[in-house]
Image (cartoon, rainbow, N blue to C red; front, top):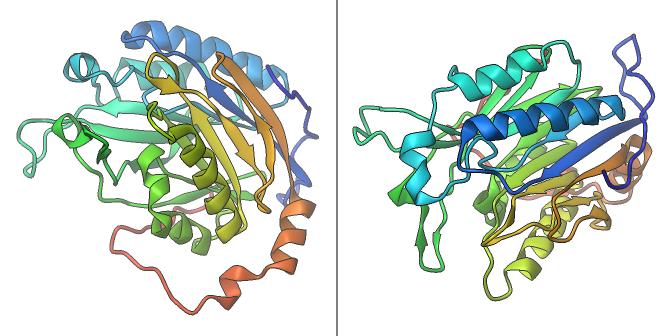
Length: 291
C-alpha cells in the first residue's frame, strides 16, 4: 500500500471527524468474478487493518468489462460476487464502493444489456447504488453496444461526517453530475474508472479530476483499473486541485488522509457553490438518508 496513514476512530457523538482515511484500489481485474471476489476480500481486509474508513474499488471490479465477458459474467446485485463481498466483510465498519457488472432485463432493454453499476455498502448492508449514466460512445468505442445507461438515482451517503457521492469513468467529462453531487452536500466524490489508453488520455484524466475537484470544492478519489488498455493513474485530488497522492501504472492500493480543515479552508476562500448564478437539476436525483 502507498502513502499509508492511520485515522483516529470516528467520534462516538456522530460529529464529523477531523480526517478521513481513504484508499483507491488499482488492480488488473480478471475476467472471472470468482477470482476477483477472492482478491477484493483480501485487499479490503488489509485496508481495514491499516485504518482505512472508505475503500474504493475501480469500475468493473467484479469482472473486467471486455466485450467477450460482459454477457457471461454479469450478475444481479444479489448474485454471488456482490453477496459474497458484502457477507465476507459484514463484520467491518469500513465503507466500500465497488464497481460491478449488473445483469438486468427491463421493458426498455429486452436484450438484457447489463448496467455498469457502483454499489456502496457497510457492515453487511447496501447504502447506495449508482448506475453509470454516460456511456463511453467516443473515440471509436461504443459502450452502449454492451451496457444499458442508468437514469439515477444520484445519491450521497455519509462516512464519518464526510458526505460522499459516486460517478463512473466517462461521467467525469460531464460537469453537471459532479455539480449535482456537490449541491447535494458531497465533500468527496469517488470516481471508479477503467480509463482506456489513447492520445492525450492520461493528461485528460488528470485534468478532469483536478477540474471537478476545484470547481466543486470537493476531494476527488479516482480508483482505476490498470493493465492492457487501461492506464491506471489512480489519484486523490484535494479541493484546491492539488494532487495529494497518485499511482502510476502498477497494481497497488493508494491510501491517503482527507482533512476536514483543508476542505473548510478552501470553501471559505472560494465559496463557489454559494456564488453560482446557474442551477443544476434532473429528475434522476434522490438523496439517501444518512445510514
